[in-house]
Every structure is written in C-alpha cells, then in structure tokens.
Length: 478
Image (cartoon, rainbow, N blue to C red; front, side):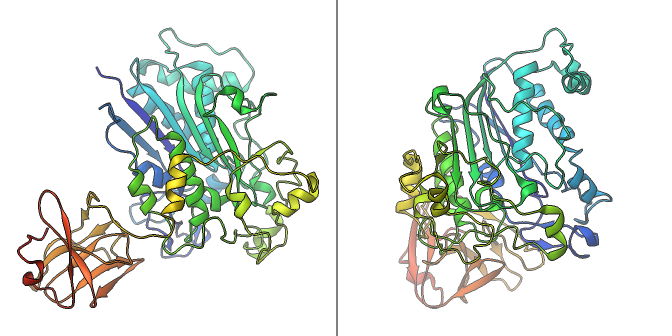
C-alpha cells in the first residue's frame, strides 16, 4: 500500500463549512433557536485548497471537523443546549476523539499526518497532537480504550497502553490563535502541557496581536530557551495584526485573515500539495493596501450585555507578548491610528512598553507571500481554473465558486463567462452575461469574456449581446 497524507482540519467555535456564509437562520441567533453561520475561516479555506494527491502522486485525504456549537438539524436549526455545549467546552473531548479515530483508522506505516485548527479548533488540534505524542495510535480494535486512557492522563496516572499501539511523528501542526477556554476560564481537559511535542516536525502558530477579550486569551507554545528556531527553520510562532477572527477568519471582510492564511499556506506548500492559485484568488475583493486595514475591536463590538462576563484585557496586559517574541512583517505596515482605539494596542504601544529603541523581530516573508503581495487586489482567473456547475440555485443564491450550466427553462444555452472585475466565472446566454457577486448576480452589458476551445482553453472578449459570430469560429465551453 502506497504511503499517503492524512490532513485533519479542526474549525473554531460555532464554525461549520456546511452552513451558508454570514446568514442567520429563522429564529435569530443561538439564543433565539436559530443558528448564526459566520463567514469562512482560514481552516475551511485551506481545507478546500488541498489537492487530491501530493506532487509525487500520494493520496491526500482531508478530514474537516466543524467547531463546537455547530450542532444543527437538517433544517439548520440549532439543537437543544447547543449554546451550553459551546460555553462549557465539554464537547471538545469528543471532537478530539473523533479526529483521533479518523487518523488511527486510516493510518498505515509511512503515512504522514498534518493537523490544523483555529480558536478552540486549534486547541483541539494541539491536544490531539499531544495525545498522539504521548500515546501513539491505537489499533482499530482498541479505540474503545480512548476515554479510559484520557482519564488516566487527566488524573496523572500512567496510562495503560494496549499492545500494538503505533508510534509515529506528526509532520505538521498549524494553528491560528489557540483558545482553550472560550466563555469559561476552566480548562475542561486539564492537560496543561504547553510544551511543543518532540514528535512534531513543523509547528506553526499565528497569534492575534489585537484581540482584547480576556476570556479569549491564547494558549501559546512554550518557547525553548533558544527559541522555536532551535526546533528547525519551519517552526514559528508569530503575532499578526488584528483581532481573533482577523487572524483566523470569520469576518465578512477578511484581508487581514488573508495575510495569516497566505503565510500558513506558503510555509506548508513544500510538503502539502495546495492549489495556491485558488487560495490566492479566494482573497478579499477590492482590499485595502496590504496590511493597512483597520483591525476589529472585538470587545467594543460586543453588545452591552455581553461585555460584563467577557471582560476587556489586551494581550500585552496579560503578559503574553514578550519583548523577544516574533512578529509577522505585516505588523510593520499596520495602522497605528485606529478608528476604535479603546483597549487596543499598536506597534507604538509595544515600543512604549519595551522602549523606543525596540524593534520587532520579523522573519522574512515566504515566496508565496511575496507573490500574493505582488498580486494583492488583482482579480483574474487562470485558464486552468476549475469551474463547478450548479443546476439550480437555492433560494436565488449562487455561491461564488459555482455557476449554472446547461439550458435554462426558456431554452437559452448557458456558457462559461467572466468579467474583468470578478474573480469567479459566471454565465452568458444570447441575452447577456452575468457573474456571481456576493449573494446576487451582476449582468454584464459592456464587455465580458467567453471561455472557448478544448486544448488550450482561451477567453474571447464579447461586447453587448452574446453572438456566436463574435467568437470568430471558436467553440464555447458549455
């Protein structure tokens, strides 16, 4: 059996890729019985960019796990006590168990394991990797011992590890802003080891510089005396500008999250086969200049009733940002004058704390990041872009990565089309062309392009009404 790569993606609290972006189900938010569906996180976006095979032909198998608090019925309504589970964190152990079972059931000698997560999903990812480091991978027939072994670890006992349990390294653990106790200061798992397990080859942690909610303090990896670089050049823990979801994703505008996503993708692209072009083109449309966007003030954005239990505290006040910490280079370009400065820190705040002569330690950008900066804000599609067809739009909503295909009810044949101001392809008929834009469609009258040919594919410009004669003999893709 050929070696393969197992990739586990653990999303953050309340995040689920199966729920529509940024829409509240009937009944309101969680408190009203509905389910709030946030925008895509970096975990989801990265998981969707993984190709089927590595560059040398090995399978890449993806396991995506929704976050705690996403339990819903088939009508996308929150299940009973979802908010309680989300607040207490008791379901995290089950998330770890499920991800562990996926790896243990599918692992064979020679396989590589990569684990990613955001927020409490990052916490799940790190506890999962720590469990594998301490125990190894149980054989399928011994998976029933998982909770017994977990209890022994929690109680400080020496675990009874069944024979045949397999020891393995973990190729990579990549996380965004690890949070272990959202809404609850108690670590429900009570395994407090923050050391970086020796079995992890590549460790990557993107941290939020400007998160200011005390209940969302991050769980850092303990840095060795010689720094994470002593573990090798691929182990990094960097501070990025922005609030919690500015770094891990989840806001409608996500140019700050793009920076942390592109960093992660560039760091892992040498051993995971990722569709980097797809990932880059999923970036924020019409963004502000690179790294200059205003960060969200997460605490001030809370409703009044939500502020009291959350409490405000910067991560500088908590002592988690050390003088010798490493920062992403985007911090150097981040604004120091904020629209909502209350309870927020900037580069000037750090210099006030560490001294005016202090300068942040910023590693060089990776090659993919440099490419993304060169292409920042541009919107175009390569000829190899894979179009996904959707026969019927649900509630008149057409996802940005989907288009209608075939023949409409009125008999109009639809062809693949694009416009110069859109990243995703659309459709064209004898009447006009249209492209998906947000949650609607924009009709193109002045100029658009039709995808034609077989090999190679070619875009042909069309002005006004679509007419086959304008293609000059080229065959449109339909």
